[in-house]
Image 1 (cartoon, rainbow, N blue to C red):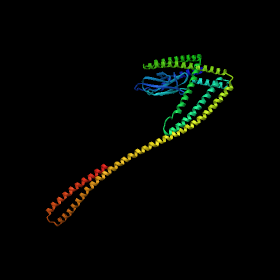
Image 2: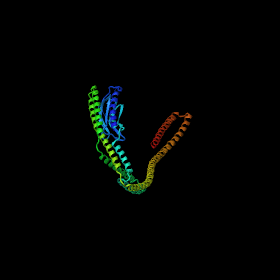
Image 3: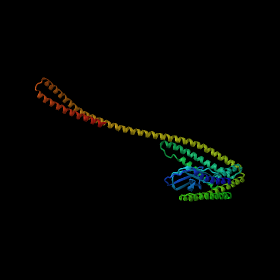
Image 4: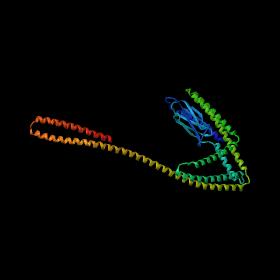
Length: 444
């Protein structure tokens, strides 16, 4: 453990040195500056990391710092930022440092960091200790605690088997009900969820008991923490010296935030190191205690274990039956959904057909109306055609008289009268054609 914390201090210093060396690669351009806020999310093995020091630097100097909270998040507000290249550093004495280099920060964005642990966590130490204790207890021939545990397992498996049998009956009922409706589909899932929560609660209780039984022994951790504190003070002195060279007064606020965040991170990490030390000590004590506890109840334990195994075997058989019932239920629900889908499609087709029928009825009515109008216009056309025939006969008689060459003045007047009649008849024909066109256009 001591080596791990010494390496953490070296890496911490090394990270700062690298940040300083990166200054030569940054080119500063005159850009519009504005206030931005970014969030840094720090996790390890899927869990949030509390107390990590988060530092944002530009040109080797800090422009924003914070310490990650219970959720592993650190929100950093930068009062003036001009889209310059920046670096985000995340440091924690129990984890390997991580950084993002040469990035342009985006207002409101969350940057995710996943840290790799340098040492085992309290939970991992506790779990490893419990595994060792369990192995020792397995080898203990006569462990009254094991007997009780096996008896509890037997009772639990028996109860779960009965519950599984009841569940099977419920599933059969749900399968039949699913054919008729879609009710009560989540009862089994809820029962399983309740059982999982119960088991998780038992596991949490066991872990809590292990934590409560741990005693304090952090002399080495305190020495390492003192060394890290001295190194942090040295780094702070170097940072303050560099800070004096900068002319931008606004960076003073970032410096203060960085110091505050670093102190908060160191305090949090001291507590976490103390917890790990306590966990390690208690884990060793638990292992020693388990080794010393050997009692004379092997036959009773074996019998209890055999009973629990038999109950567990019976439970698995019932669970297999339960799975079959579940599959049958799902198949019924699938058929139900298919039927509903077909019904909806059929209903949709019916609506489309009704719509088409209405359109067809409108077309039919329009066609009938057009036919009636055209019939009326045909009657008018017949009158025009009959009149046109009379005018044609009159024109033929008039032509015969003109050929004879007698009374031409009188014939000229008669011809003009006939031409006027033909013209009026043409106008009447034109109006009738126009009525036909309008009627057809309206019908379409």
